[in-house]
Length: 237
Image (tube, rainbow, N blue to C red):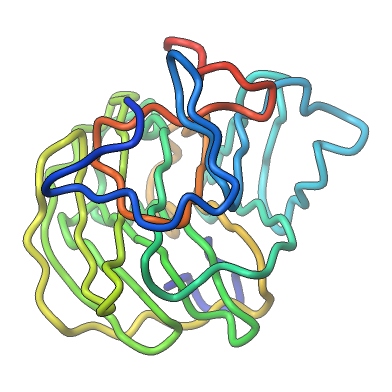
């Protein structure tokens, strides 16, 4: 995903319009759906170890319930080595809060799975100037627009990639139209899961908070509640 020079970036099963695709070991519980590729809610993730997550750059605190990423005037990046993410027929969901200060065009949030080239297999970048970039398959980029709110606004971001390779983006259950275009710079590492917060050159705004990341084989609606590794739905925030 795109980054400042020299800094690393970054319900239940549905039917009808939202076929679940391959179950592939999926487990459906009464209140959440087991994500069959990757599940992280950061519960119990604190020093030492941080559940295998690596701090690549910046001021990062694992609280045992979430991750605080404070970019100050630069960036904060976490990364967990991971492979085996399919380039299509997959759903990414992430829940986070924006930085606690006001909106600046220099802000940027990026989340997703990157491949060995450092490009997104299924990943999304949200910028403070309203630009959205979605990367799929380590080859194709799409762009759209969103409305950042600042002041610690909470968001659920969902990217689905259909079996034919077509992505769809939802932010807080609102569909975001995408068009082909854009070319974010690759990360200097991979494959793995990444979350990055950038405020390069901007006024320090305080930390952003990451609550969960899920990857599931299949296409799921933006209202889907995935299970944490403990089998429970994510805590309410």
